[in-house]
Structure formats: structure tokens, C-alpha cells
Image (cartoon, rainbow, N blue to C red):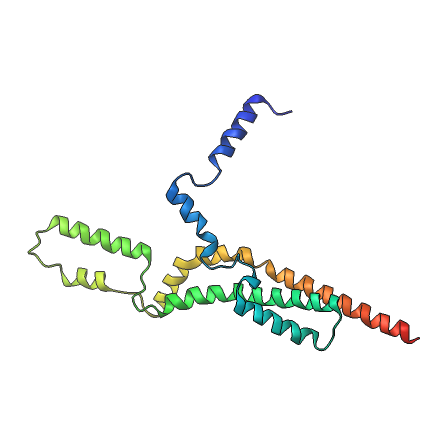
Length: 193
């Protein structure tokens, strides 16, 4: 039996954890699912729908068995969906790598803070030193750029891991298709006796 104190504490915790309270916070979380559109079903995109149909036709071949056609569509949908999920990290990293002016948010904040500190301490007629100007205009290059991008994007990439269970959806669809194929073969063998 739960005590009155524990019940009050549970209710208080539940109220505190019901999501964002501000209008800005709510609008931000409302856009989360739209950021990469991975929460949308494959059939919501006409191009992906065509790919699913084409792949299903390849899987099923000339077989007109409705059960196997449905199972082939499930495999194709899961495969196209999985391909779409696995493409997003590549897209995120290649977009950042191709940006010649890429700079991490943390480094931009450091540079802005340094510039503000220097401007506050000196008069506006005094030019900044070459070292400071060089630091403020520097950008990561080569392996440093790649490491910076990975460090910056790791949380975004980790957030995509929740879509990986779609791999098991494909696996189960393939197993069901194989079982239906075996049943069909067994049925043909039994009828042929």
C-alpha cells in the first residue's frame, strides 16, 4: 500500500515531467519529428512508395499468391525504410564536412566572448593583434575538422539510434516470407504425391 506522502510525491513528479511548459519549448518539440521525417511512414512519400512497389515486384517475381505479395511488400517497405534511416547520418556528416566555414557552436561562443572581452578592454581605435585576428578567423581543417564535426554531431547521431529497430522489422518480414514460401512448396509437394 502506498503512503499518502509517496502518492503526493508521485503526483508532483508527474506534473513536473509532462514536457515543455513554454510556448517556445512546445513549438520546438513539435518540430522534432519533422527534422528528418523518419517518423513518417514510407508510403507518405510517393517516390519511396514507388521504390517499395518496385522492390516488392522484384522479390515476388511472377507469383500471384496474395499472402506472399503482402509479405513481399512488408519486406520491401522495411528495406526502403531502413535505407532511409541509414542515409540520414551520412547526410548530416557530409553536409557538415562540405561546409567550408564549419565551426562548432562552442568555438563560436569562445570566439565571440574573446572579441567582446577585447573590445571592452580597449578603445575602438586600437586594432586587434594579428594573433587574435588569426584565432578569430581560423576554421578547423582536415582531421581537426572531422573530429570537431563528430564531437558536435554525436548527440544528433545518437538520437537516430532509436530508428534502428526497423532492422528487426525487416528480419521478421523476411522470416514470414520464407515461412510462406516453405508452406507453398510443402503444399505443392503434398499435392504432387
